[in-house]
Length: 119
Length: 107
Image 1 (tube, helix red, strand yellow):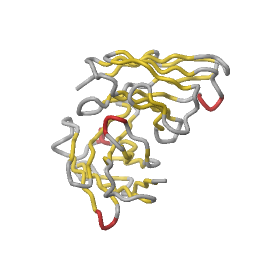
Image 2 (cartoon, helix red, strand yellow):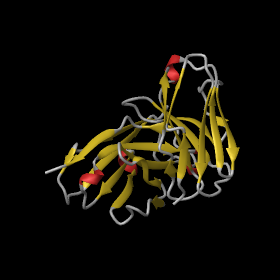
Image 3 (cartoon, helix red, strand yellow):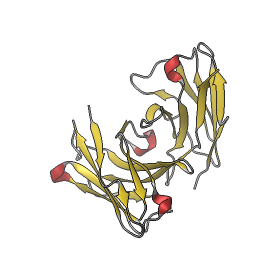
Image 4 (tube, one colour):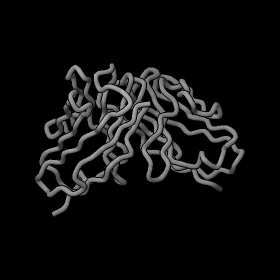
């Protein structure tokens, strides 16, 4: 049973970089899955940010593509999210998730972590 | 981006009722649609993938149908634990997009 756990600062200053990590347990990040980041705000609802395969292949949401980077660390069995030049609009609950195949949706989710952008 | 529109935005029902939630895509997405349930303070839970394929462990009172642009999630014989918010998500093309959610409340 794969378990995902997000971690990272809960407060980020405007214009800074939001950095989160998702630790994968109960399975290998090198398995044939897509590792995903989704965020949720009261105003915009659920927003898919992007995904990565252990091979390094990525897909990003064009609305944030220039600011978002997703990476994999096989040695630590985890993947990460960075969002640069953050504003208050990036305040959200951030979830990491797994999709066996992108087209089939995400079947395993972390509990989510609230990140607030504020000075 | 493909826009996903759910209706209704909220619905009130009683235990034992049957409820249907609709999701419409702004363009055809074949059958690449997922349904999620989210309880307050929790992560979304995948119920149905590929429009009608029930995830392992999900009760059979949940069912999904549709293809192209119009999809439905039906919950029969509502149980107390079913009162939550439901989201559809298209997985046909990037970026993946979600509906705005349907809140199922107890009448």
